[in-house]
Length: 174
Image (cartoon, rainbow, N blue to C red; front, side, top):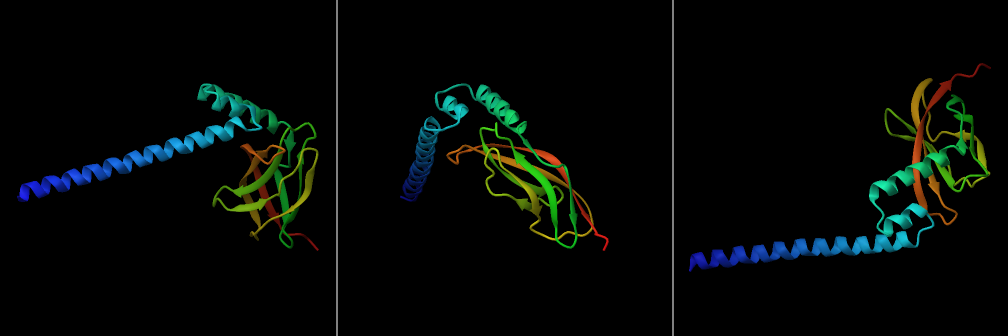
């Protein structure tokens, strides 16, 4: 009698575990179907190719080439000098007219991961001359990463790239 109960309990646990894992598989499949559908309707060519079944490594190479090409159409100063009294500097962030994508630019402090600045969406042919940091820093030299997030005209995320910049905070002489 006792052995039979134990056997029934184990069978119940196995059935429960099987149903649980089957549910996870079905959920993942449904998510993949939705993702592929969104990729088919995408404005971004490499996403359409991914949905069509093109090899992931080939699509990745196309995406990276597209992002690399886009990086050649944007610019900003790589040394940013911020006076301590107002934390505003000339950055000359520019998204060239020939760019297919708009951008959001973030400056992230390498040592802490803190976002020191984030722009709104900058359309092709536009730019931001001066930026103000979100926080105060002591006088010094701060290695950072400028992250460029690219978006289509329909606000679809395309990808991101980055390059190194330096935030330098200085005491202004009166």
